[in-house]
Image 1: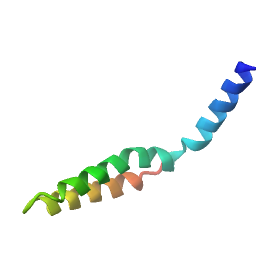
Image 2: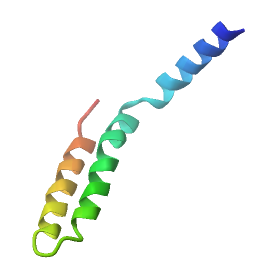
Image 3: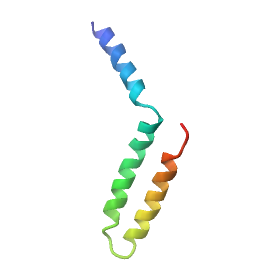
Image 4: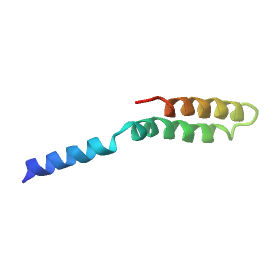
Length: 63
């Protein structure tokens, strides 16, 4: 019974860990950090723009 459950779990894991999910796992924390940094006066918006642009490039990686 547990072996079947483990195999089923692995199949679901492989199904959901495709390229889109993998890049989102990396970019969502980046975007969140950029949003928090944008609060800082003067350099916040510039840093947020750079982080957001980097996250966009990571999202475009063909996996």
